[in-house]
Length: 314
Image 1: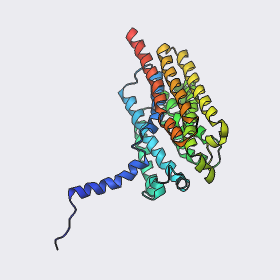
Image 2: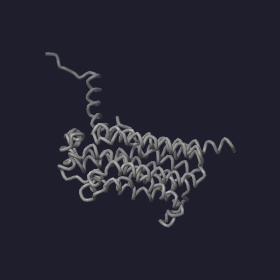
Image 3: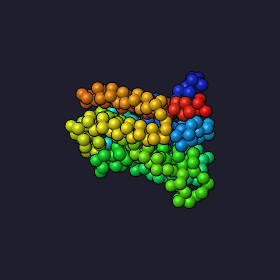
Image 4: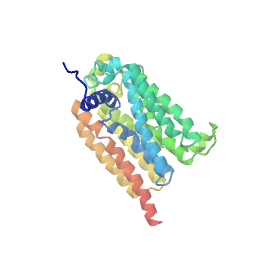
């Protein structure tokens, strides 16, 4: 009997089957997740640089955001693997289903984090120093769901840390002292972080509303459970605080009416989200969550066009 040999097509299929679980692990087919981090980071980068930041910093923060969000997914799925098997939406995630071992997922996450750190090394000492607490918050966040009633607030810090890092990369010097960080990161950056944290609270509460029934059964703590019947009101209040704080800070910087239009566009989207989450259906809440990156995009476009306006008048 002739020996059966694998052809090129078979090898390609085997390679694809090995890669697919890792792509699923980092949510490769769901870019909305990393866009939620990218828009406020790039908006801060434009503000810190008084306009276009240059291709180097743009590439560092765009690629770094994608890599760190992917690494965060690896850490989160390993930390939550025992909980995820009891939640309809997450039961088939690669680590939970056994398609990828916890050890392999952590190794992959570490590789992605190292690649992101390699990008940070091309910036300056204050940014490099700030990357360590950023990583610490990313690792710490998944475990807060066991004991903290509003773990979304910790996620808000993790998802907003690109803002002060963008300022550090744009304005920081070559000093390795920790004392150099306050000079590189002005108070404005921290206020933008606080404002953005409320946006994270808004969209991740929508996300938590999708899984509330399952989370109650397994003892997971989320903002949706903590807020109870005030969940919808809480989400809308979070949106309002985010948009009003960024509007105030932007106008104080002199970004002007074009920026305000971007904020209004984001606010109209938030109002639409109210219609989606009012009934508290899984589909409606998940749809609202997935559309949130357009809220951040509207604010970012307002920032960019405001500086473009300045250039055109110069």
